[in-house]
Length: 199
Image (tube, rainbow, N blue to C red):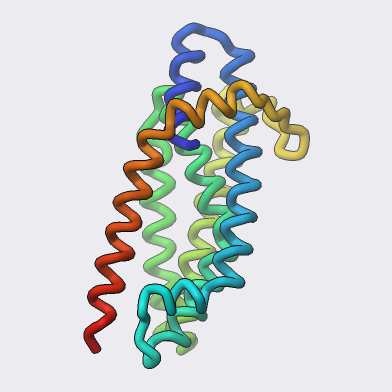
């Protein structure tokens, strides 16, 4: 969806069809928000089943589940930030998302050290550090964009319009990339399952 949306936005932006650019942005945000909620719920409640499917060892299973459940709470921020990044790339700006990502990564590292070393929170501390850094990146990027980018200045998070036609177009365009990424992810999961057969 993100890849298809990026291409769609770049096409309309190049054609100077501002209305379609705006509608594409709003549609992407709506879809990614709904998707993030679905992924969060599935991930949170199916965490144990997922790790059992990957043949995760009993010695690390409790920590893996703890980390994953907390991580799932950050899906809205993760999807949101990736949505903003997709939109910006479509508008020809690939640098700004990188800057926010660098800052988020640095914050993640600092918070991980504080939570794990200082507060002795262990795996949960690492998970909270990741989620918090995701939210900081998302909120910071959104605040920055509504002040700087003209396409975001009129964007109201609670008054977005969904365009079915643009959604289907983004799916059609992004489908090959989605399939490729899915196969890579499934391949990695298969590799992890094989490795987990060893102690």
